[in-house]
Image (cartoon, rainbow, N blue to C red; front, top):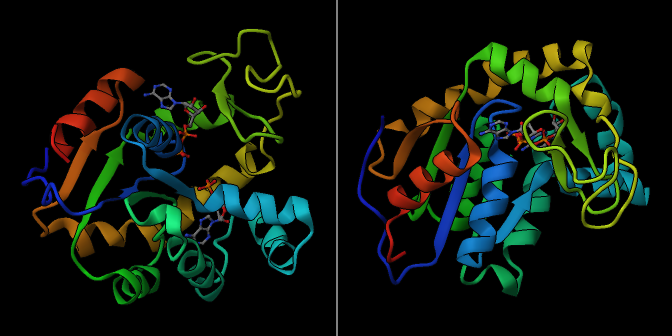
Amino acid sequence: MGGGSAPDAAAPTRIIFLGPPGAGKGTQAGRLAAERELVRISTGDMLRQAIAAGTALGRKAAPLMERGQLVPDELLVAMIRERIARQDCANGYILDGFPRTLPQARSLETMAGADGFTVFDIEVPRDVLLRRLSGRRWCPRCQATYHVETSPPTRPGLCDWCSTALVQREDDKEAVVKRRLAEYDERTRPLIEHYRARSTFHRVDGNRPVEAVLLDLQERLGAAS
Ligand code: ADP
Ligand code: AMP
């Protein structure tokens, strides 16, 4: 599946995760970030934090996220522009959930250059996505993610890291999931065409155990980068 050469070992590692909701982007981005000492930038987590903090951005994003719609490009672009300019991104970063539209992808190229990104498109069959999303549980305090069957917390219903009660995300409920998958098909899937011709684009089979997917990503990134 896919293929291509690893980026220049001396350049910062910058990674984009594409893939539908539930594909495992956050899970893999978290693992890779920890193993490679990279910053993970999850736009979904940043927006949920903005909602919890009651900021102007959070107030604009909340009704859209509740309905499973994307948040306007200009808000996301401003958020990412500010985030990737911070010092901790100098050695590389992983974008988890951005870009999600063609205008976002073009803005990223203006901000950070068109080259130098490794793109992982994680593919998972729709019925598996639905099972993953309905079983996903989330810690509203530290944002850790679990699955009731495939990666349950040690103590039922409680976060392993901070003991907070786990919840189901409102947008993981069935009616909203349908809308999110439709948004993905209409607005995010076209990004595959945008990136596919690049040598650093990789289509990855995400319908395997977490460790197997991670190993595949590590191999494609190359041991040196
Ligand atoms: P995304 O960030 O793409 O929406 P997540 O990483 O949050 O997806 O994963 C969605 C759900 O599926 C979570 O509950 C997670 O624990 C579970 N999950 C992730 N990767 C796998 C995998 N390879 N096998 C089984 N379950 C997985
Ligand atoms: P996620 O946690 O990645 O599943 O994102 C949850 C929700 O946040 C999405 O359904 C969107 O409403 C919003 N969101 C996250 N990233 C973006 C983005 N790049 N563009 C627009 N909306 C986004």
